[in-house]
Length: 139
Image 1 (cartoon, rainbow, N blue to C red):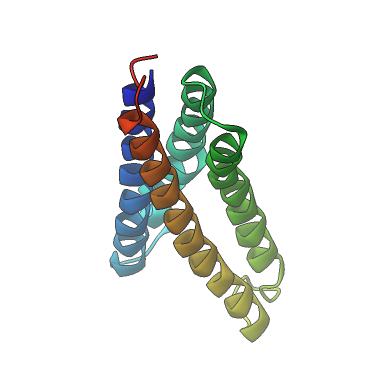
Image 2: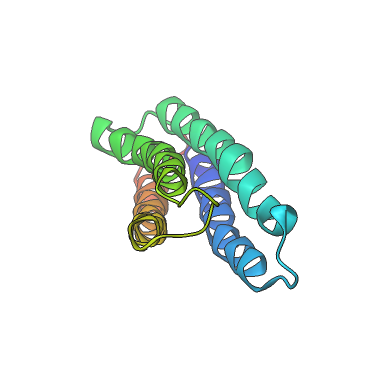
C-alpha cells in the first residue's frame, strides 16, 4: 500500500503540474471565450479534488503517521481555497464584468496559492517515498 501511496502522490503532482499548463492554454487562447479555461476548470474542480481524496485514503491505508496524513489533507484544503479565491476575484469585477485593480489583486492570490499547493504536493510525494523506503514498507 505504501508503493501505491507513492504512485497516487505522483499522479497528484502530475495533475497539479497540468493545472498550470491548462491555465496557460486558457490565458493564451485567441479569441478568448468562456471555454478557454475548460481544461483548467475540469482538472481543478474534479480531477485534483478526487485525486486528493484518493491520496488521503491511500495514506491512511498505508498507515502513514498522522503528520504525513495531515500533510496529505492540506492540498485538498488549498484546492477549496482556490475556488473561494476565484469566486472572490469575480465578485470584485465591475458591473460590466471587467477586471478591477482589486479583482486582479485577488486573482493573483489564486496563482500564489497554486504555487503553494504544488510545493505541498511535492512534500507529500517526498514523504510517501520515504515511507515506502522504510523497513517493513510492504506492510
